[in-house]
Image (cartoon, rainbow, N blue to C red; front, top):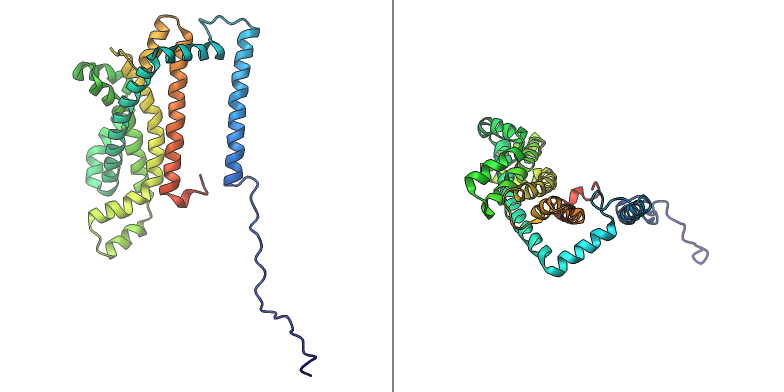
Length: 281
C-alpha cells in the first residue's frame, strides 16, 4: 500500500565526507613545533654559555659571556656607532647581492638553454668558483680602490657562483617534454627562456640565492678587512685588534642574525612563487 511504503536507502548514495586527518608532524604543526624547539634550543644554549663563563671563571678576553655581549651591544647602540656599521654593511650587501642574483640567474639560464654559451662560459665559471675568492679580494681593492664599489664587487664575486651554478642545474633538470611542447607550439627562444626555463628552474634559483646569502655575508667581512672605516667586518676586526672580545661577538651575531632573516625571507618568497613545493618545504 502507498501508506506503508518506506524509502529504502539507496546503495548508490555517496558516502558522508570525512574530515581530513591532521598530520601530527604536518606542515603547520611541524612549523609550530620547530619554532618552539628552535627558541628553546637558543635560550638553553645561551643559558649554558652564561653558566659556563660564571662557573669556570672564563677570562672575558678569551670568551665573553652573553651578559657582557649584551652590555657591549647596548653601548654601541647608545653611541650610534652600531647603526653606522649596520647601515654600511647592508648597503654593500644589498647592492652586491642584487647584482649577483640577477647576473647569476641570467648566466645560468643562458648556459642551460644554449649549449655554445655553456661551452664558452662553463670553464670560466668552474675555474673562478674553485679559486679562493678571499685571495682575490686584495686585487680588487687595488684595482677599484677602498670605496663602496670595491666592497660591493667583492660581495658580487662571492655570491654570483652559487646562483649561476644552481640555476644551470635547474635548467638541466627540466623534463625534455616541456621543451618539446614549447617547440610544438612554435615558441621562440625568448618565450622558452621566460615561460619554460625560468619557471622550471625557480626552486633551484632560490636554493642558489640562499647559499649566496652566506657567501655574500662572508664577502662583507672580507671587504671590510681591507681599508674600511665602517661596517660589521670593520667592527669585528677593530674589536679583535683592541682585545674587545664582546665587540667581536656583537658583529658576528649580527651577521648571523642577518643571514637567518634573509634566508627565512627567501624561503617565504619561494613558497609564494613555487606553491607546488609548499608541502615539501
